[in-house]
Length: 442
Image (cartoon, rainbow, N blue to C red):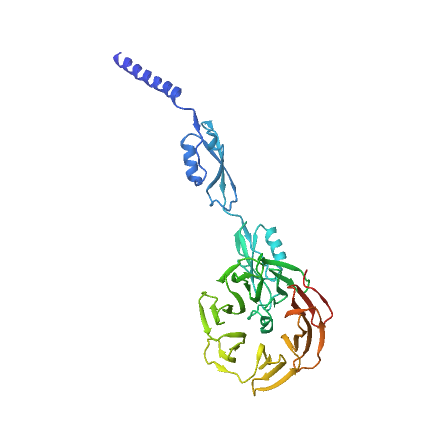
């Protein structure tokens, strides 16, 4: 009897415990935050509190594979669910992979359309190329058929056309360097602005503008345009008007000469007294003085530098060594072509001297204000003060031809145009054959 009483008491306690457990143990759970957890971590957290998991998958370029992208209900709502309820999880499958198409030799516009259609983002990087036409894709960042994530940025090397190895012609630089050319484009200083003009379409694009300062000595080498801004300094800017950099701060001086070739920049400042010739390494920005002569004009060739100073004309190496005085009676300006020096003498007559035997010849026995050489022609200004006319003649002094009478000051030759700075600071352009004359790209 006693055993039955004990057993009944125990059974009563067990029943009471069961009832109390049923009454007091929670039947609900607060949804936890599992976004950013792996699917295994998220499942453990949810199931531990009596909820169940339902998983769906989606691509994501920002969330790693098998990591929770989002959940429903959102933990931020502090949602309370009955145990056994489902929590829906969207789990990343990683980025959607795209087969990289072959877009080399397409135009940048065509390549951009192909990439956009498959969910990739084109990025244009300009590089000059001497055999691939302008705006054509030279190479692509990822090889064709390679799998890459959808939404990825793809860098495309796009041709900017032919690259100069020297920035401008000696004749243009003798005439303040208002214009230069590279490939299909002209680069022109006009109204305190630097513009580029397409030779084929005549389309004008503005690259930069300086409100109160004129631009001189435009040079173009590969992907960069170099120029001198009056009372500011020497600058460079990319062919498409981006990445402007000041290479040399010159707040008080004005330019007298600027010449750029691959890797180096040569310049003379005024009122640098005397007018010394300096050289800058474009790779590291270091400068050096390579001549302490009082220089009036400079012509730089592949191997040598020719200059005229107060002591006369000289020749030296590009490092300033091996300087020799030349046996010619030349004055300004001075241009060298095919081993012949063209210059004006003390009367302003246009002359030439063959540097092989130093034999001289007068080409024009009338006063020449300035001249330029392009191809087989000499373009020059002659006439009365305040009324200088534009002419051309062959290198041997024959076929003198009148071209224009608009009171010219300086003459630059680019493509089949003569770009003339007038006495009133306007730019006039004249076809080299004299057939067209108008105000330049107004």
